[in-house]
Image 1 (cartoon, rainbow, N blue to C red):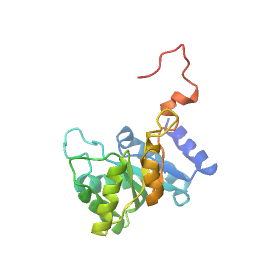
Image 2: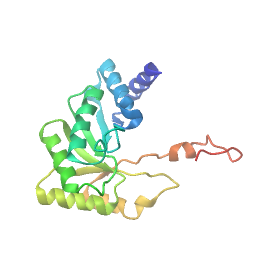
Image 3: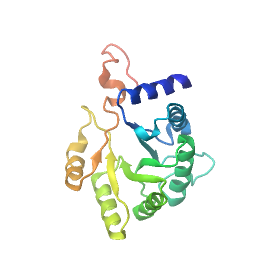
Image 4: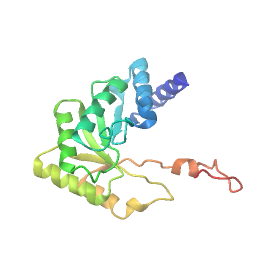
Length: 199
């Protein structure tokens, strides 16, 4: 229920949570709309760091409405701003790497959004350590804003990031924002040995 979702966001902010992370593709924009409505209702936009992501397909009829191209990033930033009912995004993250689009095109688009005041910081999600290093090199060479964080999957059953990603992040000053720390609910205890688990 919409009011329940907004109440949860209100309670979280009142309890001291100051980072809200969503994505344009979560329920095809509905998640961003809920966050936007909640922040309008409670008037606490200035009290939080608002993060969202871009990459996945948003229009089944348009093959270009996906990925990390300049067109998609800029179009989706505008759409996210509208859904979130804000004039800037604190952290705009590339949801997945793309082999089809050169990283310099992606970074130039993100840098333009920062220069326009629509985005404050940029980050990546599920990039390999080498892909982040490539992005840092390109940013430095072209004089562009760089990724400040990476959002990898990380939990007790998946600790792969400890091999390369964590040392790289520590060396180059990137924050890590783990996603799925409870393995999609698997580590919460809600699944018992004698019952079927979701695939």
